[in-house]
Amino acid sequence: MTVTLREVSSHYPAAAGCDALYEVSAPGLGIIAVIALHDLSAGPGVGGVRRRRYPSLGAAVVEAAALAEQMTLKTSLADLPVGGAMATLVDRDGLDLAAAYELLGRAVEQLGGAFLCGADAGTGATELDWLRRGTTHVNRVSQGQATSTAAGVIAACEAALHHLGADPGAGFRALVQGIGATGREIALGLARKGARLALADVDPERPRGLAAELEGAEIVAPEDALAQDVAIFAPCAVGAPIAVADIERMRMKIVCGAANQQLREPCVALELDAAGILYVPDFAANAGAVIEGVVSWLGEKEPGGTAARVADAVGAIGPRVAEILADAAANDCTPLEAALDRIGRPGPDCR
Image 1 (cartoon, rainbow, N blue to C red):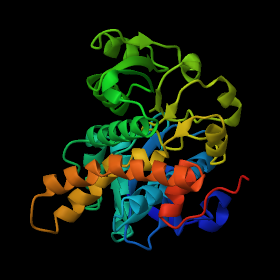
Image 2 (cartoon, one colour):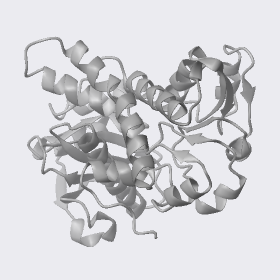
Image 3 (cartoon, one colour):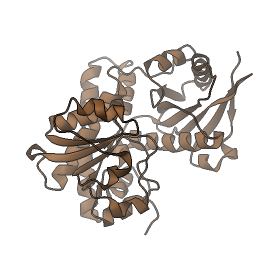
């Protein structure tokens, strides 16, 4: 079966900031995916393949473009020689997933190395193997994205606690929203740091199963998660961004988690700051998986211990977050503005 790759960035306002946007289609299947290449100025675009049941093709485009930009921010802040990209695969009833992933792989191959793709929500080890039937440009992550992402988020949480003058070792309360693979790792890691856990998920079985492993863990209804009196609120769920209207009921001291696009819009960061809530920019805290992936990919071309380089690179997330928070305090700006300034990008126009 042939696959067609068509550049369509001029058709979608959401792609205005992207270097390129492609529709991927095949006879009899129609459009099966969207590939957004946000910024290739530093090197090839790196990002995942997210598979969801999108309500429209436009929704798949919006998410691909937004997540590709997030990847650019992550890789720039980590000073990696790559840019940001993302693919969204449009799932539906009756879709032959193995065939769809292989066709998407062929489209990635047509890009000639401009997109190095990897795992994301809906795409795991099996799906990556299907992609490899069509392309060689698939990241090989050794320990899985959940472990590296969780390590970075936990380090960022500790940096935020220290910034507020708290001693993580003295115990604190944390709520993890979204108990998927990454949320689970974060909850377990925070528990090892002495946290008393509250867990929330739209699937009640997930927090119930984890709570059985964590002494004293509390299960919270998803609709009540934002109102919990906790030191750390860790958003790790897809599609649950914080809006300005939510802030009046939020009682946490810190927002720091693994989810992408945690804010409904960037200006929410200013409102959180005004409310005395410390928001750690998502792209600063949750970059562990992409850092591991890129460092591992570079390690295939360089001699030496890749594992040690990965550990060092992921381990730099905590100190980097600490510097961002210190810069924000010194310059009377939000951590989001400080992080963006660090990579030469303008902050949101909210004031």
